[in-house]
Length: 561
Image (cartoon, rainbow, N blue to C red; front, top):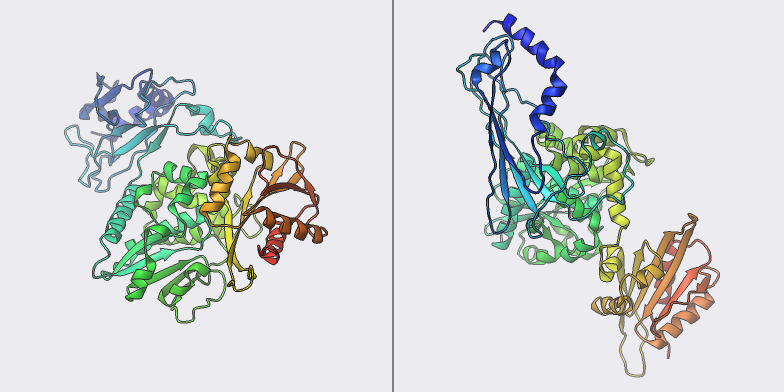
């Protein structure tokens, strides 16, 4: 076929491009049920200068399954054709626009069905391609999952974006593109978990672990760097696994992490948390090799494993372990910026997946305050631009707003999860209680919350009892709940809710507060229904959590009799 025959056809399609795209995908409708539509084209149509003949085979199927309804769509797109009629050995990837879903659509899905999977079936082949009417054309496979929304984003003040304006936002469902790189990542996570469950026979446990901060950066960097090492360093003696330095139960307190993992389609059941693996067992028999992320030394709880450290990645200053040969400096940028840069050098195409790039991008945005903090580097901004596909229709600003909102939204959390969200405890050695008694270990706990004490107490009818249960489960003699929030006049407020093990301990604490009123001026908050071992206060001046922690440390939780 000559190029002169193709040229008018191409110009015609360019002139009608907008209408053609709308027509092609406007027939995907969901009104009580989901229809399956297959559009096929005769191969001779691609080169005709006259009107194209499109044969539509429209079928509607309902597939009954016990767990979910699966609907299959097949849209076949041409790829790898040469406009000049010359032979091309490289397949050309064709961009795909998902059908427009209006914001007022009504979806009738059973309550038990959470996902409708839409598979756009095709295959990408690396074969010789000609502009010939009887030559099979390679195609590209894209698959999408249509998920019922588990949480609404309507309360989040998202910035306006072009995607939201043209496509709208469905209140019932969201469409997520299946990501080949995420599929590879999930396969790796499952294989590594299976290996750990089997005891890692005959191999070293090569564990990648970050600091003991329960945040997005910890989870994202641990998962991604472990995957990077597994892909680039094929050492048969090493079983490289990510170990997230937090308890699995703590994940329920971090809505931003859960939302991010779900939106990126990460298999959470394959993740390994600190309380699910016994590192001391592997260290005892010399089978532990540790990779430390984003720090110059291990957290205090894991300091006993320091001899097992073989690599430090993202170190901000000189390492305290001089025997470690492999050390990557942090360069003052986000840890996930360095990881994404490594992926870009090793396999840049892996960053094209939306879910894969979103996990890295989310960490960078939170670490740098949406690229606005003074310590944000030019490399952070460059890598964030490289990963911008991960932001999806929200854009970087919208993704950042969602994560920040989820960090402080406690409406769906239980009281114990609110307290555990930002919680720390430490041990102080108390004085002997009487003659012949030994020194007693005393645990003090401090929980920081972003709502007022009144809101916490009315969060649930049994809030007071749940606070006591949390205190008992953590074996804490004294629990200090530190509230910091903004009132309706945008004034910052600091409040305290103190729960002591006994009335005597509370009396001793009140005496201590009175003697340190210059550092911590308190005003009593009268809250109905408080136990005798509980007291609520308003701090009269702006006081940092660090100051309150130092006072608690000085008090020591020692009971005077």
